[in-house]
Every structure is written in structure tokens, then in C-alpha cells.
Image (cartoon, rainbow, N blue to C red):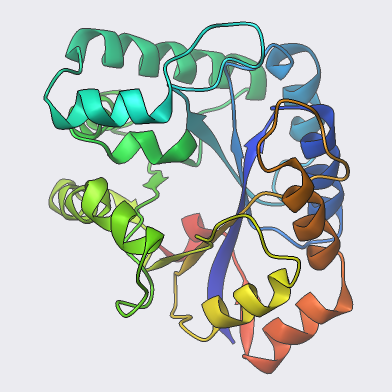
Length: 263
């Protein structure tokens, strides 16, 4: 059985997402959870609920530069990407924000993260990834963790997977290798969040499976307002609760594993 990882993003964004992720964890349908430590609910409700699931999956930081949870004005992803490509990222501010979010994660969860990734993949952008590598090497020298890279598991995939690769996925993967920081071997889960037949997408990703591949997902039990992909989250949740999902893994001779144990 080939080990791969399935990571659910956006934990602590809203109650529907949290309920979906916690339910899937209880049934062993996930092997990683990526968390917003900037969420207003992180310290009081989201983190305590997740602490009860310790040991069931890798738990990591979803580094955030664009999500304000309806309370804080944040820059758009487009603005952040443009600023990074024009070398306009303020290194001190990026480092301060990363340290602040790591502090909040550890205060809520009670231990360092098993991994770090980024909301909308901001962690891989120019001017951000360099700071990320520096902070990890200094702050977690005695605590091994892994970092998500977005290099497509299948090089033939076109469109958004290739965009992510060239927006920093490939460069971050190279930096992680040089720095001796673990990472996934191939990335999948990228699509337009517009497929009622989500299982067809998932089958295509499994066809490219290799040991240590990481698939991202975004399940929720119900849609919440101010969430552009709210309806698709529910589609994903029902797929991962289905027998079809388990049958796909079995047919492909795949098993879920914590990337921290295989990276």
C-alpha cells in the first residue's frame, strides 16, 4: 500500500468547516489539518476541539496574509502576489506576522506545528518563502517539521497546477531541499472548486500517486456566508464520508499516512 497524505485546509475559518474536519478525523478520513491561528475562534473553541484529536493526524499552521474573517480588512491575493513579484514585500513585517501566527498556534494547540503551509499558498511567494525558511531553521532547529510545496504530482497537468508551480512552488521545493527541510513528493487537489463530480477529480489525482504525495481538500458540513467556495466544500465533505472514497483508495492500493512519518 503506497502512503499518501490528505490535508484539509482552513480549519478555524467557520463552524461548518471545523465540524466537517473533526468528523472526518474521527472516521480516519484525513491525515493532516491546516489551521488558521489568526481566526477569532482559534484559542477559545477551535484549538481545544483539535487537541482532543491529537495523534490522529499532522496538525499545522495555515499561514495567512489575506483572510480577515469578516472582521479585519486584508489585502487581496492578487495584491499580495503583485507585491511579491515586484519585490515589495516588507521582510520585517512578514517575519513578525509569521512569528505571531506561530506563537498563537502554539498557545492554542500546546505544541509546535507538525508542518507549515499557506492560505492561498502565500508561503511560497517571493519575499515570503525566504523568511519562512529562515524562521524554521532558527525557531525549530530541534523540532523537525515539513512544509508544503505545490509542484504538481503529474508534470503533464496544465492550468492552475502549473501556475502554482511557477508562482513559487518549484523554487520553494528547491529551497526546502537545500535547507534539509522535509516536504511532500508531488502535490494534488488543485481545481476550480466547481465540480459536482468531485470524485472524478479525485480519481485523476490518485492516478498520479507516489509515496509521500500530498492532496489538499476543503470540506465542510454546511455552507457559510462570505465564503467563495462554500457550496463546493459540502460536496467534498460528502465525498470523503462516502464508501466511494474508501473504495478508490483501496483500488489504487493507497493508504493515508501522516507525512511527518514518511517525508
